[in-house]
Length: 547
Image (tube, rainbow, N blue to C red; front, side, top):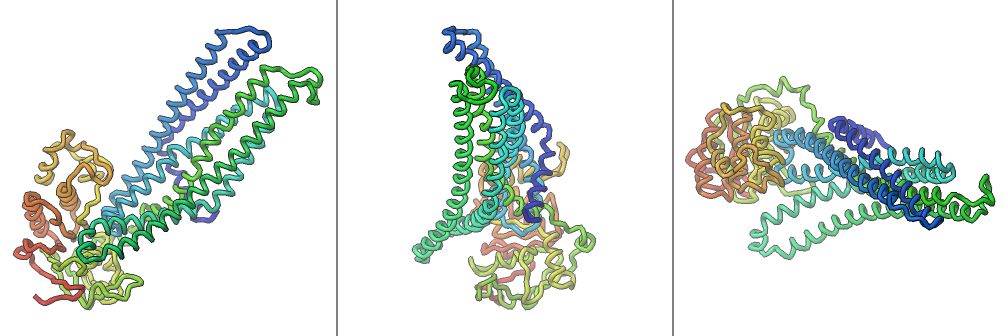
């Protein structure tokens, strides 16, 4: 296990303490459930032995067996509920720490942020809700059943013990390469999902430009790569299950043969020639498959561990990002933001998205970046937000160099994407984040447009990137965040795109209000911003046009 995997495993393990109470209760119910099954097997074997050996039907014994079997399922249900709640608690806390970082770092746009949180949630919840509980249950239940078997018949216990030791060993061997496959799958998922979403958003332009066939071929190739990665992951899961079933079959067959020979009286030992106790044989034969019950579930969930490790490696650098060493400098007030001779091209692309841009921005006021789609507006905004680094030319905050300026911009700018990122949580959390509020706290009046439509008000639960909100309502939520969590620079990418006239009438005055106290940079091709902008930059395919 390399150091990165050890760090990821340690990080995942540390989170278990956040739901310690739920896991303890789940473990108690699991042990009680397993104990009920042991008694079920004992009474059921007694009923069967009396019926087959002596011809006696004992209904009371059968009722006891059914009662313990019912109790087994009831306690198992409670255990699963506590385990599932534990997974929800841990993942919810991870996401709450992740949300403000994604909101403020500007390294992720709304689409990639949504995909990242979705991926993390989908990968970590099964790990904490299923893999960890099944691992604990395998140890607890198997340990308890081994004690019972050693007490009743040591040879059966030895067969089960060997199986218990061998199965985890083969799981480790299979899991060596599984984590790398999962990491590749996650990276492809994040990368290609963003690509697919982008093409979906621009499908009208693709059709108008008669470029549909070429884009279809491009997406088909990416889809095949993603399907191949998914197939490789499934192959590992199938392989691990097949190997487990092989060991389980061999173990139970060995126990059955042992009892068969003993019952025939041909097994050497103290019972040689005397036969074997039929009830004990039935009891242990009924109990043996249950020994592998949680091991089976553990193995089936083992790929959840590999997925969680891969996701942990993605999210750890984000959660552990430390800017405290430059905190004092990052608090420096904005006095000037100058762009000189700025050129920018994306990696592996010979085409310059921006070419020889010169602009002096004020410390406050509204700066409008105009241009048709594809002219470089969003790229320039990302550079101003510190999420892209300009190597050719300068973008200087208060006369400092590019590297320091990028760090300052990253910390001190807020970003509104035209496809806002809405957190899983209440409407109140989405706007105020961790800030505690009461009835006397003020908030932007335009939020009443949303609150009046929601029966639960601030406690309205939002999920799946805010599918409960319209596009305009999402923009209002994002704008409210900017106002309640102010930063020296507010950057808005197409803030009025696809909005109705009523919402635009609300948003425009609020943007102008923001510009009274800080620098607001707006990218838009709408003419409504021209009369109110203090500075206008007109871009045409990356070139700065003279007004």
